[in-house]
Amino acid sequence: MHKIGHFLRQSWLLMVCSFCFGILIALAGAAWSPRIEQNRIDKLNRLMGGLLPGAARFESAAQVEVESARGKLLESDVYRAVDPEGETDGWVFNAVGSGFADKIELVVAVGPDLETIKGFDCLASNETPGFGDRIKNAYFREQFEGAPAGGLTLAKTGDAHSIDDKIVAITGATVSSRAVVDIINMYIGPVTKHIKSME
Image (cartoon, rainbow, N blue to C red; front, side, top):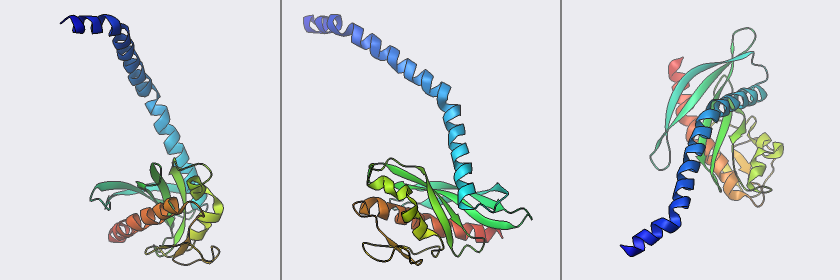
C-alpha cells in the first residue's frame, strides 16, 4: 500500500498531463478533420484531371468491393470521366495496398474500352525517400500508360520504354515497385468487371 501511495505521489503530474494532451490531440483531430478530407478531395480531383486531361468533369459512378490477398474487403470509389461532348473519356478509381514502409493509395485510370491503363498516380504514400518514393516519378509511372488492363508482371531488367505487360522495377526499390503492380492487378479485374455490368 505504501508503494502505491508513493507511486501516485510521484506520477500524478505525468498522469494529468497525459490526460490533458490526449484531450488536446482529440480536439485538434476533430477540428482539422474536415480540412484534411477537403485537401484529399482536392488532390484526388487534381490527379484525376492529370491522368485524363481530356475530361471535362468526373462523375461518381460506383463503389466496388475488392478482396485483398488476406481476404479483407476493401472499397474502391469509381468515377466516370466525361468529355466535353458528354461521352465517356475513361474511368478512374482508387486502389490501396501495402508498400514497403506503409500503405500506398493509388489513383488509377483506364480507357473507355477498359482494355488499357491510361496511367496511375499516388494519392498517399510514405515509401522510403530516395528509394521507394520513386514510384511517384514519371519514368516509372510512364510504363503503365497504354499497358494492358490486367495481368501486369514485374521484371528486374528490361526496356522501361516498351509499353507491354512487363513493368521494370525501380533499382533499389523492388518491394515498392512490386506493391504498385500488385495493387493495380488486385483492383483492376473487379473494378472493370463491375463497370461492364453497369453498361
